[in-house]
Amino acid sequence: MAFTRRTALGAAAASAMLVFMGTAAFAGDIVVHVELWDKGPDSATMTDAMMANGGKLVADPAAATMGINIDQREVSAGTVVFAVVNNSKDIIHEMILSPLPKDKKELPYVKDENRVGEDEAGHLGEVSELDPGAKGALTVDLKPGDYILYCNIPGHFAGGMWTLITVK
Image 1 (tube, helix red, strand yellow):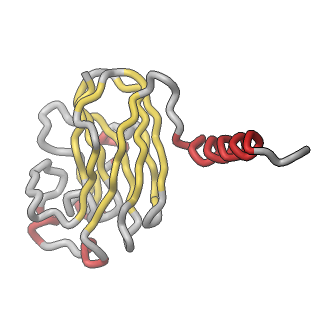
Image 2 (spheres, helix red, strand yellow; image 1 turned 135 degrees about the vertical axis):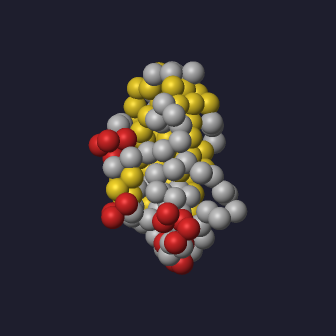
């Protein structure tokens, strides 16, 4: 078989499909791009004020040493693909999805473990422990409501690593 421009383009297309197969969305799926970030290796050091926060959803972006950015704060109900990248240079992060509590004030927090009680929070899925620079995806069918995305590695939630998304 002769090597032609057509075979080269076909091979490139096949390679691209293999690269994106793990995070590919089907036509009609909503894709939310998620960035996990931190301010460097000292980000994991929690202050007493942060640890006292527990599971309360009190946002002070200036105090956050790590966080989650999303490109959409509101999406339609249906199949949603969360395409996640850990933009940290030093720290492993994860992304967990849970429904937001009705009072929108507090998640079940395991204080002695410095993390959210995932089962009690209604864990709907996750992209677990991503090394720095790594990518992953979570595909879920979501009904209308409010949801929270958070990192549940000990200390990360209290460090500001959570964000909210609304499904209409």
